[in-house]
Length: 271
Length: 322
Ligand SMILES: [Zn+2]
Image 1: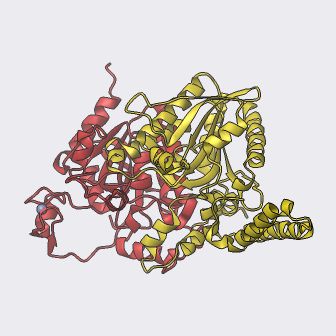
Image 2: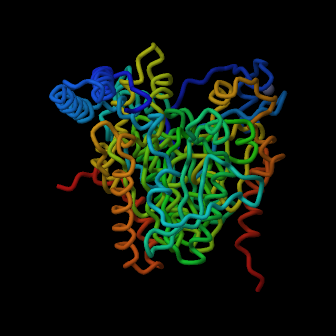
Image 3: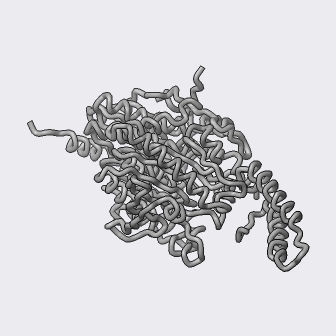
């Protein structure tokens, strides 16, 4: 897996965002990144996700050479290329999504995994292009798509071009739908903004991880707009399920088998 | 005279007030200063031209949001020979921030859908300042499907600060509504022309703009995020939205250079609100011209070409042709 990530110094203890307890990290890792005390699902790296979902954790990566371009020459307190470099150093990734081909219980699938640590999983040209090509390649290979979203939304350093990625990825989904293979969208913590409002909510099946934050606007923006304290659990996966916005919530121990079942039922034709 | 002046229009305001006073006084005074009036009129035109030819991106944002700027319903009234408004999404309710219906321009029947901010305080509240909720996008989609069923082209008029960030909007699936509109627009087998008439606010604008042509009014803006929100996130130190507006490249000229906008529709010096009828004629001419070109295409091929158009956005910026 050295392909995607350099080793990151391992802390011995981690604080759980769910129950605020300090927990032995090895215990969390052993439990697929789930807190043993409160079942909080920690955010995962791409490698951890692939290990959890794919047979042998093996991915043949696609389009890794599609890199970031500073289209606008964007500069805030630092330059956009500086921010990209920092994100690359921090994550060992080249961009906020990794795509490729793997197998889930021996079934070939096109897989995409976003990483929130890379500039908040934001979608610019490179992310949009990798995801669009994921759908193209799945269409050519006639295989299903499983895509794990984790994103705060569009990459504002790429201005209108980042907004256009919503239409671009949607165009790729639109083409993919013509071949009749399923697209399973897995919403992980957090999935918001332009990613939520494009391919992430275009899946044939939309599932979410427990307590993942999912929505269009971020909770702080909403609070500032309506000047009301938000109800407990607002925009969490359970809230979306209750309001009919997602198909199911799946905890990590059942993730792989659930994906296998869904893909099998959507692909199988009686002989 | 306009009702509202923007912060950078103080010289224009002064000239216009003097002119107004003189014109009011003139008939009563035998030695009416006709020459002074003429002189002031010329000065006003010069000032308008000077200011409006050199607007900064932030100033353009303010013009795009000008309270007197023509809104979707103004364009419909000026451009369309007939219009029947249609209400509701058939699922939850009717969102007044989006107006739409069946229309006719000359002998061209079409479906028109636009965002409407409202002008009076009461109307703004009723129309939620042009910030749609999911039911607004679902109403738009319902009308798009009617257009496709009866093979009528679609005109969308974009003017929104963005999709509404509220509790109800989230409960009813704001992200899903926008995602679905984009996906379905990209597959519609009828021509779609979009005009950004004022403010194109992010995904809330794109949900009506995934069409075949994107036209922008000269002083319209279209951005992934508002300059105010962008500056708050990236600068955090009281930097003014000016700076973010410049970095974001959100003007009509920027969007044309970036290959997102197909055409810029000129406005009179001082902005569209100074001559709404003339601006509406410009929009009408451009819309009919693009629709008639698109009508030549087989409708089956249109959706594919539309998808390819968005697939290619930014390609030449990332890989410049050698
Ligand atoms: Zn916990």
